[in-house]
Length: 274
Image (cartoon, rainbow, N blue to C red; front, side, top):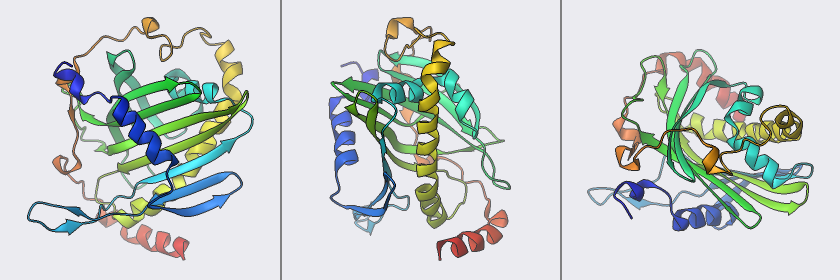
């Protein structure tokens, strides 16, 4: 393995992600209704320098959805197809692939709209994918790219680990699992982040499902044979040495002070949670 390849996820990483998606041990079920489940990982103590224990402030959550009218293969295509995302993702400001890292990995940029008066966010992630039998996995995590540093007009968020597991349950049905541990940074209180993620994640999944219902018809009219995530030889992205990337740690980013615009919002969220 080359030095650069060390940052790329291997089979062990994909297997561990799959295990987390399927496990219920140390996960608390927050919601289970109408084919949608929301789970939050029960935090475990970990040691810090100096021997003190701490609990991670940002929760790891997962949502599982039963889909009865779209195949796993189609949902997988929807999650990959950057051109189609412009049609169904209302929060997206900008999104583009930066470079190929391997036949099943790339690095890309995504920015999105946040509710005013919060500043909009962006993220640079290494994304990798794997297809085995009737299972499809996509995972990503934040990296530093030398040509895409944090911007002054946006807050650089962090994906510690985010991904999808799609399991085929029939010719036109699947189980759709989304797992994420992400930090939007800024100075948002972590309890607000954790509550918001539990509400927003199911909404995003329903939006992706709806996009999956319309995708086959759209794709027929838009380069139907072009799927570089399945056929790497179709990609026109330039290759980049993975050694040029390093994992982006949250503590290395400046926290933009948004506290002055959050006082009223915190009271609103607290009332909603009661």
